[in-house]
Length: 125
Image 1 (cartoon, rainbow, N blue to C red):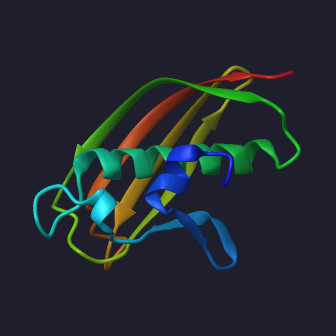
Image 2 (cartoon, helix red, strand yellow):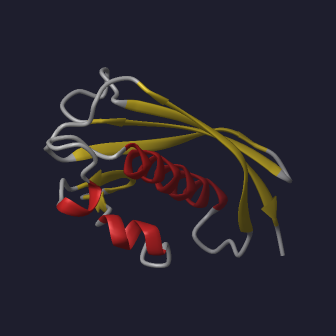
């Protein structure tokens, strides 16, 4: 994840023992209105989670380039001033296109604060 500059900027880390479960700490750099996460930070966090999930599905050794085709983010509730978690799930992995769903939550994975659907072009070497 160190090679994703925006993930470093946000302070995203993997949760112990699970490379696809990510954590975003609450910090001044991700604040929108007082006491809430900025929507762009949430969207970026979901994108990072989807890229990590796709890389994991492709395999650690893969040198495939991943390029976004499109993404849709649904905001369901405000992200409060506490740690946020996200996970991406690859729903389709073709030879050239991949589809990934990601969700972000704070207290309960069953109550997401946002969800995203992303499509990626895969350029294999």
